[in-house]
Image (tube, rainbow, N blue to C red; front, side):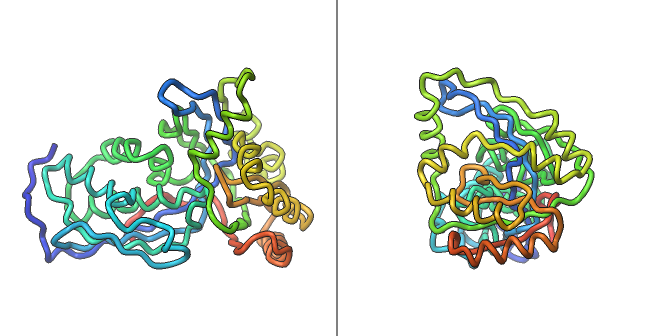
Length: 309
């Protein structure tokens, strides 16, 4: 713990951090553990859709937000960004007096780790604002305490997440991958999707999760066609069970020429891997015209992790 002052420097310059969304190119899920979590082999790929978190000196902890669907996120201390500020402050003996302003561009409750991104962004912004001097390992430990996806939001790029997703091994990526994301109406609760996974797999022998060698090789080579054939998400049947209409979205994107389609994480955002930027424009247009989603986003991957801008 660093011995720092308990007062807030109201003259400190505000700090803005940009942090990316993610797509899970593989999400292998093991059986439920005694603690209720699941062991995972979670291959994360950061994509070029970003939230920005600005930390400004304040006389209390305050959260504000702007952008898509911000009416769906909490603006109190239950927000993961607020929890990030509190945990960092507690470790360094200071009060979490900061105004965190979140500029959202990552779909809310869409399976793209928007809340986790905001937590990682707030953590890095507060670290810079307060000059805590926290090491990378300390920041990652706080991220893991906040949630399974938060460490990757800090790191970005591509990584294999083990444990419940928080134990990261960086992965090599040999090129640029082009993606189209279809944003559905409403969200899907991650605990509900895992609960449905448990219901659907009850009485079956759920294998230990392992990263697919062919998928890791496709990432390393930058081969989109090879990656398309290796994409997988063990939560997809559960997400489709809870939201059957997502099947129509997946079919619409595939019919328009996507190399592969899958539910992103716990959903309900669906992800479409395409050959290039031209194909992305075609698939995006077709998805919008299909009426099976309310918004379409195009992005490239990999993207860098949380960074002060």
